[in-house]
Image (cartoon, rainbow, N blue to C red; front, side):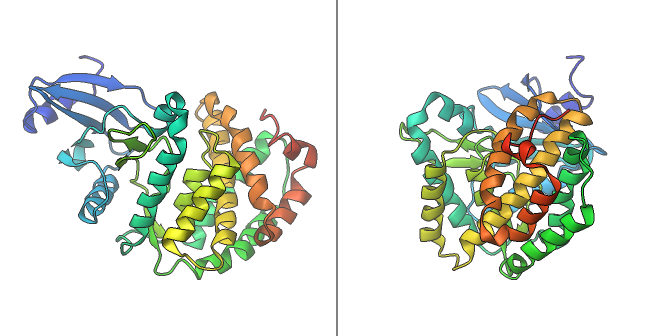
Amino acid sequence: MSELPDGLTRFLDRAGWAGAAIDPIPGDASFRRYFRVAEGGRKAMLMHAPPPHEDPQPFLDVAHWLAAHGQRAPEIVAEDAAAGWILLEDFGHDRMRDWLDENPGGEAGAYAAAIDALADLHRKPPGPFAPYDMATYQREVALLTEWYCPAMGLTVDEAGYAAAWEETLAPLLERQTPGVTVLRDYHAENIMLLGPAADGSGPQGLIDFQDALVGHPAYDLVSLLQDARRDVLVELEQAMLDRYIAAAAPGAHFEADYARLGAQRNAKIVGIFTRLWKRDHKARYLAMVPRVWEAMERDLAHPALAPVARWFDANIPRNIRDNFGGEIQ
């Protein structure tokens, strides 16, 4: 028990879970830690998001809002935001990505259910969250020029890059008012299958939504269908995009905006994964860069991305891009 964070057992005692068995879960790319706890036939998930590195209040705010609007966020059992502790419902072990690795025949059903859940979320009024504004979009895409380009030994036109994105994203901003709740990391690693059927259909639970903003409905669709962590065939991507459009009727410009946000998100992810390698010494993320880069190239081919595509042509040599981003040094 010496390796457990200080205050863990005190929190569980106060929450009425004294003497619970505690099973740490391996972490990923943040300071958050998770533990499965069990006591007297009950089970729950314990999140430790310690200040000042983490602030659990946004997670709590979004979880409460989602639950109040009929979305399947985990129930909050007990909380102490000031100390970074949240005891919440345990959604089990069937993460969508892992389940699909073992049940590839359920892919269409699982993605269809995720699309339907997203369409349902987008019928709700947007939550009381900050806007996904131009400054946020620009700050995110700048991660590519801040981290990836130096790692490739490239000196690039950063002002021209920002100007190209400004021109490309400006029309989209007009179409994200009043907007929808954007979870921002809606993909197969953050969707839990709650008793999945053999065909992948069935109820799904949401996790890792603490960074929610109010923005464009295409963003989470891109996050799901251009997944950095698993291959999604372009045929499935198009079928699920068509399914969403049929359910939500988002308007004539939606596919162009989907490409805009696909390129925006993928540029950000390339930058983030490079930063995880260079700054945080987490080299495993580099293996995902070719998948992300390939999706970004498809997005850049859309006419709506012409200003950004011209910048890429002028600043990142074709031999690097043809190798799906090249080998980061």
